[in-house]
Length: 272
Image (cartoon, rainbow, N blue to C red; front, top):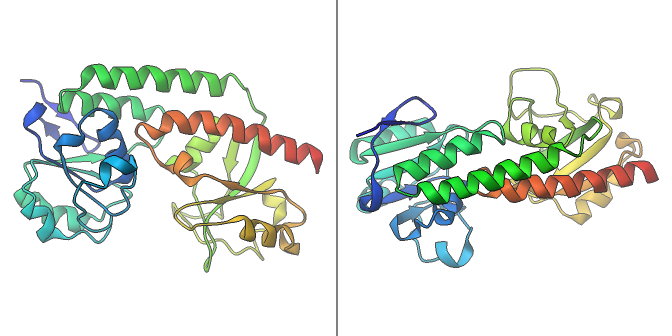
């Protein structure tokens, strides 16, 4: 029987219809449902909100970082799906003794979703569905890259008090790069660094993007930043954080969304 390797190179055997899956990652929960596996999904986090009508019937096991270990154990999962960035290693290690397979994911580029689809498809007996998603993702990538967008530097804000942004080696930054948007950040090793807006000034970026998650930036925040002298009249736009940060099946819609978003950004910059 063939072995399948996850993001850490850990081998897994095909499970098929016998799998009982707990997902600790919202975008992976969505992907599992997209592959037609919702009946085998026995647990999810409170942040796993899509597809809404499907997941509302699936038991919650806490958050992505504050998992109820006893609750997961009671669900008797055969598979736990996790992500390097979104889940805490001590929690995952605490769950390993009573889960047959812990499947670790770590996509960093939009194209990494192709391998993710195929891993889950082969692991859970959904190869045809996985290939259909791969075809859609490849088409979405081709369509976005055909735009040949000129480079724009963007300050992509994900939090306030303190202000935080994304580093260049994150999935978000690489999704933005597919539409010619370079996510800028202060120098340093942090993947999600704090940013001092008094020091990191408008010479560093062409526009400011306010993500709707994890902080829920709103139109009121956008208007406040437009009036803030520190931004020197740079365009400020709200951007759908799910479309930039959720991998899995959401990446297909995310790439199409970024094509339209980039056109809106260009229009605002030309009108400024």
